Amino acid sequence: MTSASNQKTSINQLLFRNLYYRYQRFVTPGITIGVCLLLFWFVVIPQMQNWFAIRDELGVDQQNLQIMHQNLSLITSFDNAKLDTTLHVATDALPTEKDFAGILSSLQNAAAVAGISLGDYSFQLGDLSGLNAQGQAAQTPVQLTLNLKGSLDNTRAFITQLKSQLPLSDVTSVSLSSNSSVTVTIIFYYAAVPKISFKDTVLLPILSTADKKVLEDLSLGSTEDTPISSASAVPSPTVVLPSPTNIPTVLPTLSATSSAQ
Image (cartoon, rainbow, N blue to C red; front, top):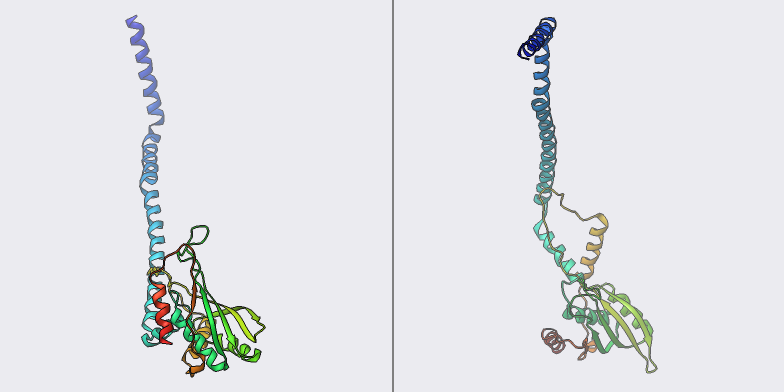
């Protein structure tokens, strides 16, 4: 049993020895090629991938640097005085909150130019919670119902003049009463200042030509000096509040505005 096993081992050794002597010229090149393949797979390929990633990051960094240079050039080219004027005009056109003083002033100016007298009026303040029916943030425009005492031509002139006054408004309905008085419904708009989120890797937005033209037209309209006629003094308002709602800050503003008139 032992001699058979020794004979089998001798045969295997002889076989391996013959294979080695026959293919020994391929052993060293094969090992070299295998090591090279392993080095290429585990060293060269990761380095190439890393190089491509660095190249992409460099391209992104160069693009961001170019954007920051453009933003810097844009910021340094701004005129602070002009920016303040533009912001003032924009906030006058669309106040950040319900601007009752501005509303009454625009009504007085338009009535003085049109030669018409203002009668009773009432505010529809809408939902003061700042939320719509879906619970999302929303700003309901201020609706004003106003009685005018004058002719239809004066009423037409009043509506035309009101369009050039700030804050921005829109006449939604006009009705003529039997006692020669006209009732108009006006909506005054306002908008909160959007949240500013500055990112140095994003180009700063700039006003288009059309937007600049709108601001220039609003600026011309807001700087016109309009005489205020004493005959068009605004009477005490009737404020229609949503129910049930308690607004401790709105009522004093209205009464103070009314007494100032």
